[in-house]
Length: 316
Ligand code: CP
Image 1 (tube, rainbow, N blue to C red):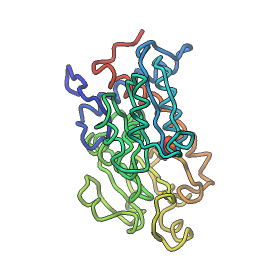
Image 2 (image 1 turned 180 degrees about the horizontal axis):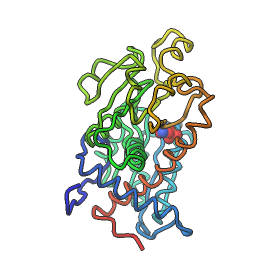
Image 3 (image 1 turned 30 degrees about the vertical axis):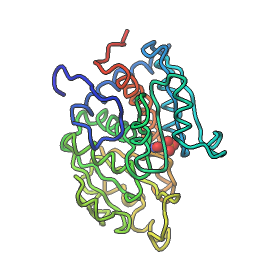
Image 4 (image 1 turned 90 degrees about the horizontal axis):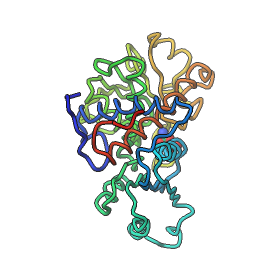
């Protein structure tokens, strides 16, 4: 990261538009915030008096809870908006919802929505900062940042690593953000699935494509499994789960092809015996849970950085 780097952006909408320096700045900050979570008093007054609104229009366990906790550990006031309990069901538009919430002098909106571009739309219609917590099939930047943080903790650097992403690439915002993020930081990214799950436009992205899982696993330093996003499937992408398991699922036999130090990641939620054989749970689940726990530190860093736009000076 360049010396005297200063964060300038108001929003975090995706990793495609970020520079390597910006990504490394967030990852560096997350290290300091992870330390805070190991203290007896896991809270700093950095964002006292600031207001953060979690705007979740789509289901979430990990992202919503870790953003909420991240904002609370920074001492911000947090409001959780859930579309299913809101007046959207009575016909109120997103824009009117936003206008009403804005009257509380909101500093940060964190948005998850099933439509690609929703976070950009909100950022164009508010004076607050906006963090994309996953928009349709577009991007999920903080998921990729926590994945990169987890890998960097293990390997020290991302440069030169082979990172293989396996599963439903087509519908995955996690795959897209990870391809942008890891490739900008010097890793070699591979994507592997059934041909129907890797659309042609992935050829324009900085990733190697293979339909051969053995080639994808060979020499991989990181293997990231993705679930089939049934809620986004609008046609038959594979003949049967039996066939999917034969060609894609990480099994005992396939895991034996990996190097000893290979890190296995999954953004969650996991569909055992489809993404990963359930017999591998004792071996892989603790690491995947550690990956999820890193989301807290990364999201603290992102919220803080967008608010303060400067080096991390909160410690102590
Ligand atoms: N990885 C992820 O985004 O999980 P949630 O949908 O539970 O937030």
